[in-house]
Amino acid sequence: GDTGPLGTEEHMLEGEDVYRRARDLLDEIRKRSSEQGRPDVELEYLRRLLDRF
Image (cartoon, rainbow, N blue to C red; front, side, top):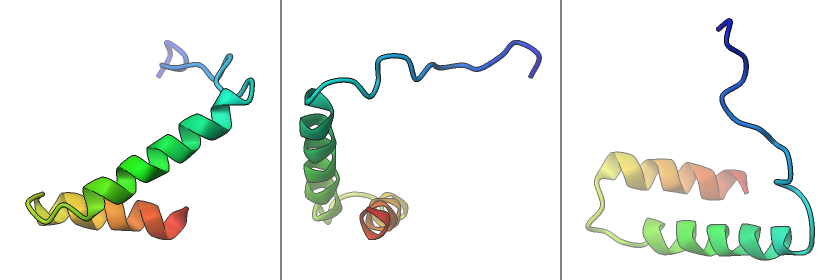
């Protein structure tokens, strides 16, 4: 739109903490994708994320 971007990438990719955060997020996606009680559409989405990364 005419209002500009909603978010910012400022300070998102700084420091060694970035790698730990990425690993934590990937671990969480793996954990959630193995929870069979989640809706199928969510499980499919999580699996597509894992296939990508």
